[in-house]
Structures are given as structure tokens and as C-alpha cells.
Image (tube, rainbow, N blue to C red; front, side):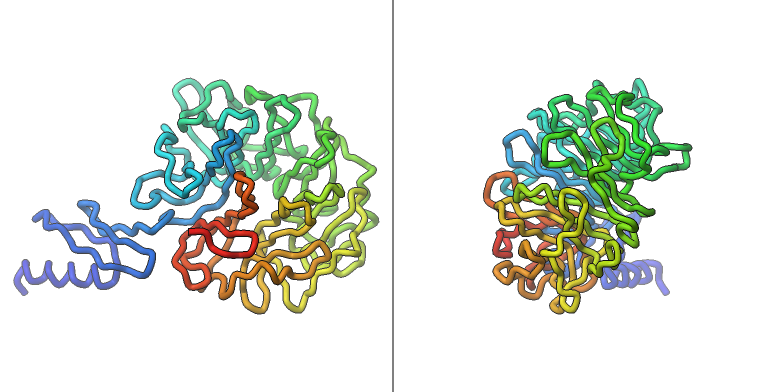
Length: 410
């Protein structure tokens, strides 16, 4: 076989199978295939690379910016957004375009969680399996980025925290402090050995907050009563606790003799003024009461018997989201599966499915959701992130916005 003919056949096979192939030493530009709906294969000069209408790979966590802009922060495994290079961390304008004024100066490895600073600065915290050797000191586990994406050098944890951070929750008491949780141990040694920690606004450890409850690796949320208390969850019994603002266990929140029988993954505070909390996880009962991986607890820790989920049509999707509606209804959005495999469902305050929120066919294939947030512009819309390519037969990738009726916002 002649060398040139062999090269042409190889190139044809590469394009046909959508494999990223080099252009060869002759520098010939390759005409890339069209791909599926919502996909765009482009020639980079070396390979055929997939770009999508939105992010090119999954989004793991999102957080509305709290600076009045109504922008949105996102982190994940993506490297591009609408053909624009942006690696792992992005800020989107309220119209869905990329905020090009935010461009991280540093490539952090594997950010998995994002939380906006609530001091009006527009800054953002990122966490995960982070590692970066900065010019003055290393960054591990958590970092604070300025509005333009540069590292905030005024927030420095030094070597006092391991590389794996799963939860970040800024305090709302005006201190600028932040609660952080993660696995009890990492390869660098004991990290959150005694439970969640509280960092001062400069990144140093707040030694006035000392917890004896090894929790927070799955979820940390602030109590809604202004006390400064937090709820924390974990994968071992008793699975959930309320901690006072000094880290001690709040004994007024009583989970009973046995509590949940299995792991608690998510906690969310109801927005109807009751002080109740929603709890989701792999559990099947709470103190002997059957519950389908989703429960509502009263503010004292007792089981809310008025919230009943129909297990025949509802199943909570593991490690998904629980997002209370912001309209005071007591309703809640959940990442779940029912007979239609809808993936996003709105439940009424009694646990029944809100049929006014309808998404039709929902996701396609092996899609999944990882996080959700209420839009900060007062619309009542919700933003859902994850790993998906379609919504109700419409191409939409990795991030979508839905109205309170379930209509896709384009």
C-alpha cells in the first residue's frame, strides 16, 4: 500500500469514529464531522475537539454571585464554554454568556465545590481536591478568588488543611468567616478529625470553634434563626447533628434513640419560616418510621409526619440536590426519579408531587444532576447543573435554567 493512501484511510477512519486525530506532518487541515445535536467538532490545528452549546464537560457545583450582578459561578471538569477556553472555574453573566472579566490566573487541580462570598465583593471560594504551589505559599483544599479570578492572597490557610474539601459555607454574621468540611482523613494526615472547622476571614483557623462531632463531610448548612448554629451530616451514626456557634452539640435538637438508619447526604433549611429542615440520603427510616430517602424534620429534630413521600412514584437520586423554593410555600425541588424518570421534581409542603411543575420527558439516557440553585434575580427560576445533553427533547448541556413551572429558559 502506498504511504499516502494509507494515511488517507487512517484519517477517514479517525473522523468516522469521532476519534481525536492529529493532522499529520503535512499540516493538512481536517474537516471534522458535525456530531449530534448541540455538539460542535472543531479543528484545533492538531485534533478534532468537541465543543458544545454550553460547557463541554460536566458541571459539579454552582453558586449565584452575591454582589448584585445576578451572575453565576460554576466549577467542574469542563475546559471550554461555547467554544471559549475556560478551565474548571467559570463565571457566567445572567444572560448565560461567559463573563470574560473573570479568568482564573491559576490552574487548580480538580475543583469540585464553589461558594460565593457574601460580603458583596463578588469574590468566590472554591474547594475540592485542590493543590497549587503559589509564589509565596501553597494552597490546599480551599482558595478564595477575587472578582477577576486572581487568587486572594489575603486568604491563606497555609499548610493547615488537607487537599480534600467537600463543603464550604460562608458565615452570615458579618465576620467574613467560612465553615469548611471534608473527609476525616486524607493522604496528608488528619484533616477534619474532630468535625467541621471554621476559618477566619484571613484563612487562619478559628480556635473558638471546636467540634466534637465528626461531621460535615457530606453537608453543612446554616440554621435560619440567626443563631450562628449549623447543621452537619455524615455517613456514620447518628448521621446528623446541630452544632452551636462554638462547635458544641446542640442537645435541643434531638434525633431520638436511633435517628436515621443510614447516611445523610444533603440538608436544606425550609424557607417558610418554620425552622424545619429537609434531609436526604440513603436511609430508609428515622427512629423506626419509614421514609423514602427524603424526610422533613421539625426544628427540634422530631419527624414531621405531615411530609409524606409516595414511594411508589418517587425515589431520591443519590448525592443529588435538595433545594427549597424561595416563594415561602414550603415546597422543595429535588433530584429524583419517578415513573417518568424526570430527574427534577418539585414537591409540595406535604410531600406530594407538584403537578404544576412539569418537565415532560425530562433527561435522556444516563444523565445526572449534581447541583441546583435559585436564580438571584427574583424570578423564582432554578438553575440545574450536572452531566446531561438534552432536556425534554431540547439540546441543552451541563447547565440549564427552568421557570417555576418547569419551562426551559433559552
